[in-house]
Image (cartoon, rainbow, N blue to C red; front, side):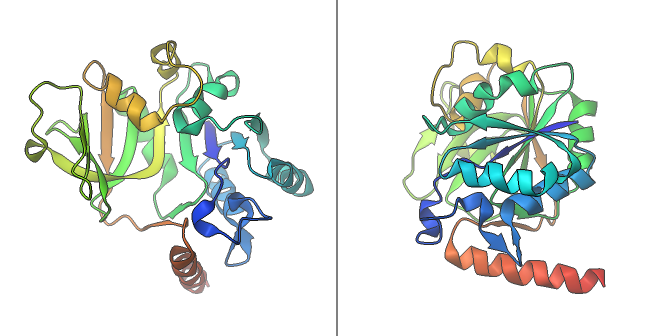
Length: 249
């Protein structure tokens, strides 16, 4: 099983912590975010992982080598010359992700209690082009899905901006979900990306093709998820991880 971890972000919301340390290596309860995600993927059965790097990327390479790649086959997708955003980052890593099996994509700054193996197997069973883990979490930006859980649009609640390739699109007719930063993609995704080049957002890409193929929502009930992208959520993540450790003892 293959997975990709997005670890190339600049971490601007976590400054000054990220001035001299890549966001992926900021510790949460004594372990870098990257280590938490790698170990969660390993526990779920993922044995091949590709990690993209940009800001202070050599530190990530050194960290992986110091830890013997955690006993996994880990590849580096190097974006140090030019940051490619989420869609461009996936396409840039195609040489590691292409093949016959789906692959999972996970943001490095997301900590959750989702069963990654179950999410992957759900995708294999239902066989959409992509399965997006979503929840009813409060946010400003929402993905909009129809009653069959197919992606149809996007809305920013703060600005009122709406995106959809469906004509006469009425966002009130769709279910709103917050995207988790975790998704499973079928390898055919690269055929759909053929005309996309350079830097592009995976969400904009999904929105551009969702009227022609199935971009599917997997709505997790009672999902516990923390986006560790800001100082206040970093503190929340620390408390959550300490609480989980106490439960495990």
